[in-house]
Length: 243
Image 1 (tube, rainbow, N blue to C red):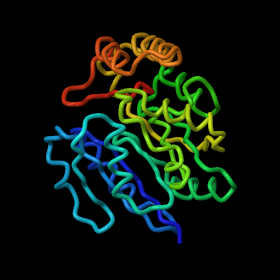
Image 2 (spheres, rainbow, N blue to C red):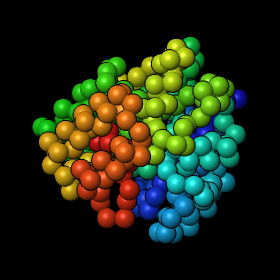
Image 3 (tube, one colour):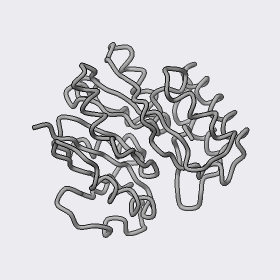
């Protein structure tokens, strides 16, 4: 039987985890599922005390960065299918079925389309790009799922990539011709970044960062620029710029 490991990098995400974990625990599936919450080194909100279930494990990471958290979660996982899900993203009811159907169809990996948790004409623009291949494909909010042996062959996430580790990994996927599919079954993504920043500011920042990334700008410089341009909600370090 297939086993799926859902790996969730988190930094002071207690509120989001309180909502997400019960949903994951009740998804219809025919496979075994383990959930690994990889807490940041500086997480201090008591998230690890949220639940006590056999298939949910909280681990503390000692390095910094989302790549470190996801790799640490991977190292503690057992599944032959890996799913990397952000704590503020909610899956559809068909989430696990969609993943297994995609892999059974012969793909090695995949992503999901998404929509925001708020109805807004401006916020409807970004999700329209996530249902097809394009410049923003591969971002973490789209939830990468991938066969374990393929992830291993690609040598996991680059822990020197302190921002845009998801895009860097996707770049290697494409270079190695890893087959993937975008599943058109929407995740629900938090729009919290827009609570502190205008739509125009976020998206101009996104565009600038992706251009600089493709031009080879060092990730530490990209992180500095991101942190100057985008104000994060209190207590959170939002290094993904997909939303």
